[in-house]
Amino acid sequence: MKKIEERIRERASAHYDYMVQTRRYLHKNPEVSFKEFETTEYIAHELKKLNIRVERPLETGCVGIIEGDKPGPVIALRADIDALAMDEEGDAKREFFSDRPGVAHCCGHDAHSANLLGTANILNDLRDEIRGKVLLIFQPAEEKLPGGGRLLTESGFLHDQGVDEIYGMHMNPVYETGQVALKAGPLMARPDEFEIEITGKGGHAAAPHQTVDPVVILANVISQFQTIVSRSIDPAEPAVVTIGKVWAGSAHNVIPAKANMIGTVRTFSKETADVIKGRMDQILKGVTEGAGGSYKFEFNEGYPAVINDEACTAKLRKAADGVLEKNEMIELDKPIMAGEDFAFYQQEFPGAFFFLGIASDEADSRWNWHHPKYNIDEKAFLIGSALMAQLVLGNHD
Image (cartoon, rainbow, N blue to C red; front, side, top):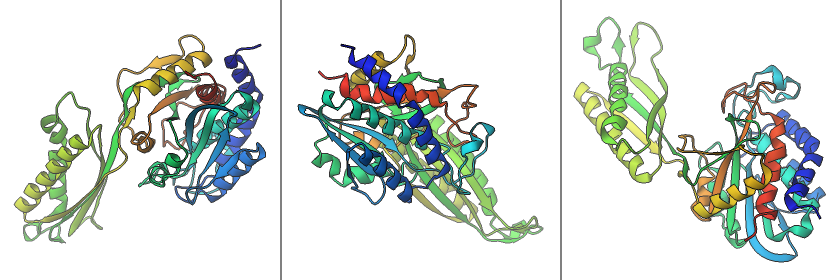
C-alpha cells in the first residue's frame, strides 16, 4: 500500500484544477472585512457538498468539522477570507480581476481559502485515515481590528471543540513557488497603531509670528520619534516606529489650525510597545507645549506577536519533510515585522504559522503583500494543500 504522503500528493494533484477555479472565483468576488457574506455562503456550500458539517460561530466566516472514526487530537487548520479596500493592477490576473471596484484580494486570502478547500477535499477522500477531529477555519476580518481571530477565540467555540493544536499559513512572495519557510518562537510582530492630532493657531502664511504653526510642531515630533527605537529600546530588541500618513492645511498661503498623522508601531512584546507609547507621549507633550500648542494621542493596541510553539513547529517541520522536495524547506533565522491575527489563537492554543512561497516570473508573482499587482503562482496549491493535509494525516505521535 502507498505511503500516506504519496496518497496525499496524488489527491492534491487531483484537486489542483478545483483549487485554481475556486481561487479565481473568490478573486473576482472579493469582500472586505466583516462583510464577507457571499464568500461565507460559497465556502459553506463547498464544504456541505463534501458532507462536512458547517458551523457559523460568527456573523461571517465558518468552520468545517470532520470527525474521524478513531481517537486522536483535535487539529484546527485556519485560512482567512477577507479582501482589501483597494483597486488592483496586473496583466497576469486580468482575466479574473475583481468585479467590485475598490475591493481586491491583494494579500492572497482568496488563495488561502482555496488552498484550505483543497485540503478539505483531500481529507474527505482520505476520511478513513483521520484520527480525532479536524476543524477547517475560514476566518473573517484578518485585515481589520479587532480581528476575526480574536473574535472567534473569544467566542469560546474553539474551546468547546477541544482544540489541541492550530496551524495556519500565509503565501509569501519572498520565497520561490513551493518553498516552505518556518521558524520556532517569534515569527511576526505585534502591530499597534496610533493617531495624533496637533492643535495650534492658524493664520496667514505671511504672518507666522501671529500663529502657532502645527505643521512645524508635527515636523519636530516626527524627527523626535525617530530617536525612540535608536535611543530608548534595547538594540537587541526588534522594534519599528513608522509614520504612514501626514496631512494638514488647505491652501499654499494659509497656516492651518491643526495637523494630523497616523502610523504603526511594531514590536514583539507588550512591554516594549508600552515603552514606545510612553516615549511618544513624552515627546508630544514636550514639543507641543514648548511651541504653545496642544495634542491628542490615541494608541490602539493591535494583534499580539505570532510566537510559534516549539512542539507544533517540530510537527510542522516533520509534515513538510513528508511533502517537500529536498532543499525546499527554509529555516528562518529572524522574524519579520508584519503582523497577523493568527496570534490570538496562539494565546489560547499551541500553534504554528508558516509561509508558503509563491514567487515566479512566469506568474508575475513577486509583488509584495498589499501591492496592486500582488498575485500568486497557483502551482503553490500542490504543496500548500498537501502540507495542511499532512499535518492531520501524517503527523500522529
